[in-house]
Amino acid sequence: MFVALGAFLMTLAGGWVAQRVSDRRHLVLGLAGGLMLGVVGLDLLPEAMEAAGGLVLGVPAALLLFVGGFLVAHLVERLLAVRQAAHGAAEARVPQVGLTAAAAMVGHSLMDGIALGAAFQVGGGMGAAVALAVITHDFADGFNTYTLTSLYGNARRKALTMLFADAVAPVAGAATTLLFTLPEELLGCYLGFFGGALLYLAAAEILPEAHHDHPARSTLLCTVAGVGFIWLVVALAQ
Image (tube, rainbow, N blue to C red; front, top):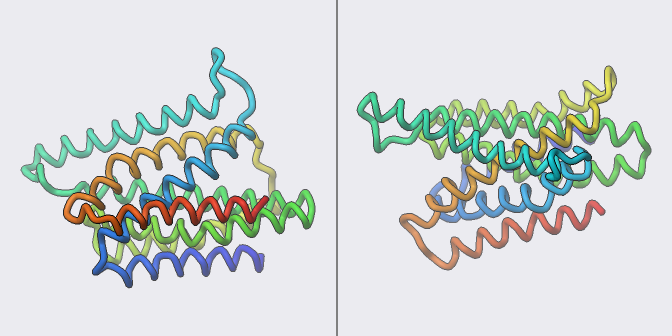
């Protein structure tokens, strides 16, 4: 539980950083997009393919759900945007998209906690490796949760609420492993679906917004740095 507390604090730290650098919004979004891309491509998708196992008509189940998550995120955003436009706010951001994305981040952090608790059930060495990965990339989770919520026009209070929920989630997830064990295949399927949805938000929303008003080299460097940070986290966890 001390490790889960570390994840809690790192998540809050990530959200705090996202708030403090709001005057450099394009850099924040560039970094967030890079962190999300790194988490999906270097962490979530490999884990999903390993855990989900079998093929569905010749295609790994995790990849099918990855594509499905991307399409569902696109569909949900389009439906919400159409509804918003029908009420005369075509140019406005859709707050529900930000809240939905942040809720998905909370779900991901819950799964992080479950994975953490399960790893310690296997052994101390496995638990330490997973703990390093979870605690370090929970900083990115907190950063992204606050950024996603506020980017879509939600009030600061809602962004802080989602950040706190994301911080509590790994602690709650780790606690649940005292009661049951989550099937590995189910965890892999969830990670694949969530990865697709997260990639859509990064590629279709976060990165274009980052470069919209400030197509600067520094923004691109922040994106590359975000990917590099997650790569380092994954390497240290091996």
